[in-house]
Length: 465
Image (cartoon, rainbow, N blue to C red; front, side, top):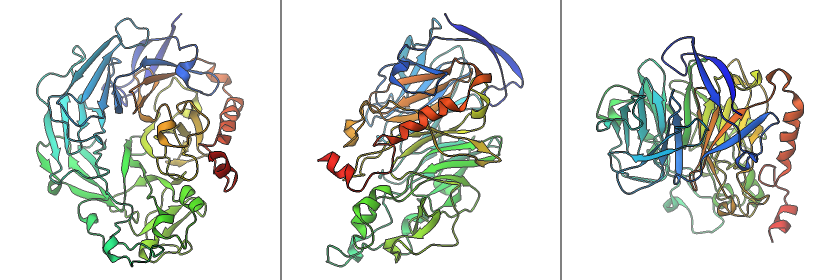
């Protein structure tokens, strides 16, 4: 039986204020679609395989829009519709009258009744009509990146509700390294270009006019810099600020073997959860963040040795585990989940690819409670079960890689994954008033898995042999 509930939801989800809507909450799958969730939560599989998926968005009528990870053809988007109300998609339609130009194509967001999405080089939008699943007309071109495709070329978006659109321009290197500057000794420290010329057009967030067509990077303003690679970015409406999760650099040991061990290479540096203000400089490529010391450190390419602190740069609001690849960030504004989740942050960790010789890590959806615009508690495991195994030796061993997050009009949480395009819908079907810490303790125990804990220097190496 479907559970019928009435939810009061705000203008954060629809254009009306204090509108009351009635939703049929579908039954969850007996096995929760393979996910492990806190007691009281369940999940169902909306679609099993839409193709390699990046971010997704859910409209006020429940239609789902997904950005596909493809680099050829002209239909890089997928639209889903549930016709019979069972929570499963019945209609699947590919669309997108634009050329796909790279596999880092990422964004899919709904803002002011427009569907915004991006290829690697272009930001598009189309007007939505709830009566039609597929937006009509040719996509409008909002912004074009005129430079050649490079690594970390995702164009993720956020909107400040004042006409501002924020676009990420990530950098393709670890630390603006230039091997031509490095001595022939294989143990020599790799040198970085100083000043880093990439910062002129990359390694930051630029602000544009969300309604102006055919903009180039020169039409925008650089809002913040020193940001290596951001895929998950959003505007927190309650705090009226920009937040993002940044991918930290790799290869500390490879670039400076005298200063960093292979173990340190696997646990450093932090991924960073950031509150980004105008003109902030977060220090890339000259620094990295160490979440064990809670300090920003000088990068070895610029004279650091793992001990020298770098001062004068913006700090993250929280250091996240190294190499977990946070690929989406969503603040929960719904009323379906227990009150402790209200205004908190969900993060989709895509999972590491180069944490060897130690096990790969991440591959979960996490939750961080929030208060007064900052984390008020530790990172919690919210959704696990994506890996299909307890030991991920290589990224390919993980069955799924969580990628995108979206909130439905009823307060459900939607999750996409990038390997096959499986889509889950997470629902709370327990007793909100009696949701207690016991459910959280069960999830906390999952942190002992090899892909969620700090690796043991010797034990994990023996396990991998």
